[in-house]
Image 1: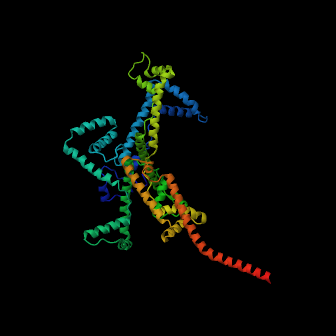
Image 2: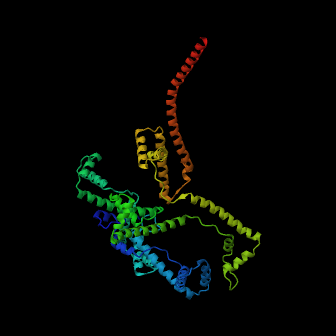
Length: 533
């Protein structure tokens, strides 16, 4: 979640209607709720025991150094000898942390992500919306989620069609809202003004105005109206950025690292052209009051929570797709012995493990072969899995941007003093004037890149990933091919320069040769004449 997180200004009626009614849109209250939430995973009973032991040691030996490597083995033996009653204390701490973690997840899901379901990649059903409401009520009361689910399923079965209709209507709202997530584009105040002008022309049955005519009207617009357009654009963009988060969760996009408070502050100041340099930004940050800084810190805290939540879902989705690890020879042996009872007073695992150790190498070979076959299958599946990319496909580059990537490094070598901005301006001028002979090659490559992006996006939307080697099979460019194409472009660029030089040299060299020949002849003639004399 970016620095968005909704500004403190109240949203307009249009933006409120476009979002579900379940969403809580007051920043101050959200900040109060999120203040104590960290989304740290619950620590198991053993780690709880280790933490308490280490804390006790620190209190006893304040200045002395503690060797954790030596103590870990001591603590492990101590934990093994513990009775169930001794472990109860740490189990209780684990259970408390587990309940808090689940409640925190529910709060983040509800307030920051509009009750999106973790496992569902489509809009939730009417029953799921009903169940989410009941689960939230259960968390507030401190009920067990399993009991809440049982009660909800029986209550749903008893509900009449009229009662269910409320949730059907909510489902329709969610469906429309989820469809919006497919079309995410940022809005500018000018684009909203243009849209408004076109709509008014349609209502009055007039000819649609051209952009050339609208631009001067925007310049002449009073400041108050411009500010209202800016506010409305900001509200829409905040909503669209939230949609972006949900889109990423639905399609399993790898989340980006969250922004810090200072970075959010810098971005805001840069948008308003209030910052000159990074040092100037640091100076402005120091001048802020504690209350002003707290606003940015709250925003960054929400960004971190959203990132943790998205990362958790992303990992879950990848885990589901991971191939299962192969079993060991011992595991295959135990699988075969399943159902057989060991002698009285001995555990199944210990008894059959000793029996497996007593087997001859010939007897073990059967299970070793099974293990090797499973390993081969697993390695093949892992190769296929490693070819899958669980991130959004790289956006296609234009012909001009491909030319910049090729040309700027060459210019840097020639003109080392010039900054990148100046070099890009020079390259842009070359492109516009059409000085490049192989401009068509760059455009062709850009078209190929567009096709690649479209195919990868189709696969990504279907499966939540795209394969690396699929393009290779379909005859599209691989990384090696891309390198070779880059070389071809540079070679063709070099050849074009050479041909120009050769032409110019061929034109200038011919008369030079004739002149030199005539000089030589005259010299020879002069010498012969002198000798004759």
